[in-house]
Structure formats: C-alpha cells, structure tokens
Amino acid sequence: MTPFDACLAALRQPGPPEKLFAAVDRALAETVGHKLFTLLYVAPNGRRVKRLYTNMPKDYPVGGYKEITDSPWHRQVILGRRAWVGHDAKDIAWAFFDHELIVSLGCESAVNVPVVYAGRVLGTLNLLDAAGHYEESDVARIEPFAALLIGPFLDAIAADPG
Image (cartoon, rainbow, N blue to C red):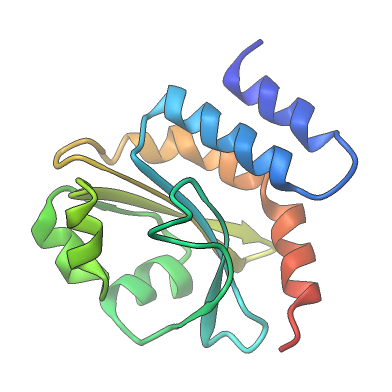
C-alpha cells in the first residue's frame, strides 16, 4: 500500500478526522520528510487561523487562534493560493513571527501548501525540517495530500463559533 493509499483508507473511516491527520503525517514523513507537521484552518472571519493538528503538541498545541496579518507570505499563500517554500532560517524569520521557536526546534526550512476548494483557501498544510530540506519540486508531491483535507477543513470551519 502506498502512503497515499493509506491516507485514502483513513479518509474512508468513520468518526473524527484525527486518523486521517495521523495518516497524512506518516505519509508525508515518508514522502518528503519533516520534523514539524501542522494543519491550520482559516476561521470564518478570515482574520485568524486555528491549529487542527500537530505532531509536536507541547510546542505547537492544537486549538487556539493566531491572528492573520497582511504580509508577503499571506498574499502568496492565503490570497494567492500558491505554496511557499523557505530554505533557511532567514526565510523562516521572514515568514513567521514565532521564528525563534521554530529554529530552536531544529527547523530552518518549511513548505506551506494551501488547502484549496472552489478557489477558496480553507487553510494550510505546513511541513518544517532542517535547513535546505525542501525544494520547490516537493510542492507537487505534497499537494495531493492537501486535497484529502478539504472535508475535515470544511467541517472545522463550519463548527467554528465565528
């Protein structure tokens, strides 16, 4: 069974989406690798994101909102619906306010892939690893996994209190 097939099997399971999230986590670890993996959805007001899943709950717990600020990263990923790849600590500092924590975890490269449905960004799939780990070509390998998250992201957005 391929990593993607394992995710499809998890998608077919009844119940909450945590089994799918864990399957996508494992599949992406095998496909492109990562130290930190998170999933964030865009709240209905479009001004905040909320973490749905993390493989490092101590440092990046599920829940809680982060405000969205206008930035080049936001314009590319959220408004432009295009993935972003950062290659080193300088890129991490450019993109993320919590860059010091990210780097302290040994993560100096990242790839953020928007989860898009009907032209709307529902959230992002986020992978982080050591400096130089990700290349632009990794995006095409990650995007099919992001598509599997459309349903759970729509459910989370619908359940958001606003």
